[in-house]
Image 1 (cartoon, protein in one colour):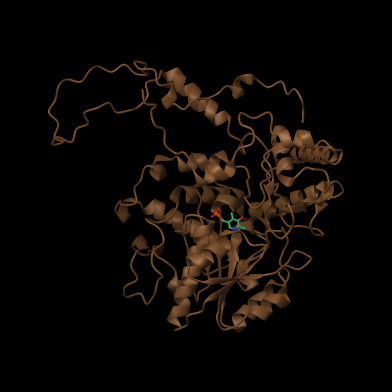
Image 2: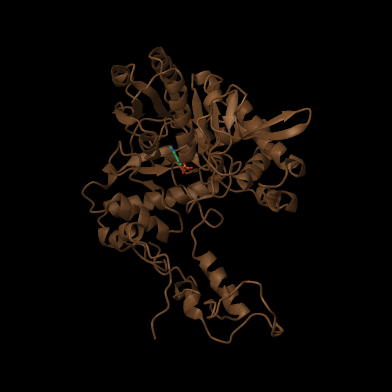
Length: 496
Ligand SMILES: *Cc1c(COP(=O)(O)O)cnc(C)c1O
């Protein structure tokens, strides 16, 4: 709570919607009046005004520039949002994605005119298969959650092919909310597996729930507590012994890329969040991409399309007829999130295999540095070392009158994006911090000093100040529930 921060008050000026800044007659261009002409619209021509606001060019430039500066983003601040892997987005990836040959093509173009784009999808797939050691991949899922859906639909189809209708999917209590949601969306009943006091899956409880009606176990590794599931081989063996499949949520892949081969863990299917691990800009709902790697046994049931390569070049397989495959269908229009593939491939190729391995090691080192430096002031939920994120709970705030939410809001005033709050659900008032490998020691030290200072102030009884935070933002505390439940998405002119 830095008192007078001396920042320009310009950021606090109210920014009306661009429609509210309408000043009839203002214009950024000077075009001649068109000559009268006959249109061929058969009477469908608009009669009234088009309804766009009139503004000068400088007014438009200021509006959008100011809006962009009100955003809290990875390019301006440290963004330790746990589970989200908010790493630096290299400008190289942006430059590649804007190359006209990659950005100005259309999915309906004849294959012969987009051989390079198909090769790019194939090469991205090749890197992901090589890194994970998995033999097959589906490139079309548009996000991690969509990859979960893809994986579970593939599993369901494989089971149906065996003539089995299995109804249950086991999901640990600490799982990301998309895991049970995906299982339910695919028609399975979700059965929760408790965690041990060490923050890992309770193996005995998991084994007790296994049976011939279990379609799959969904596990995140490293898990959402930032810990490696040490029993993973035994879990794989146990689910396979009852004929079920092992799904891995690969959102935390950044901790183990280049160090662990997914195939060696006994996993049958895993989605990869390209926008997290392989650094493409995300947040605010997209864009993302969730390519999903598969075992050879599941591959024939995966959704189409797929890119293949033969002596005639690259081709898209869009129908299974005659191939012997029994795809579960199609889960997305076109061929995947192409712009994200361009960025992810640029990232992988510029880092190289050695660079990716170094990145995962540095991510884990950074998280352990936070854990070590904050453990005496905050309350770490589990004994370290951790993987790429550090989990604390709210015991250090006990009787202070300050909640995890207040603590996160106070951090905004100090110039940092808050950590993830209240997730995972297995600890009380969770604070999940993920520094990623792209933060240097000086940034981490700054953050650590601020968090330690805030923790001391909370314990010293400054709860009033915490309740008021954030004070240095254009908006203070928002009614996030109302914003989500009854969003106002459309501007309507005020009736005169
Ligand atoms: C981000 C995340 C997901 C969902 O991925 P999206 O790309 O946001 O759909 C699933 N599981 C975990 C653990 C995650 O962190």
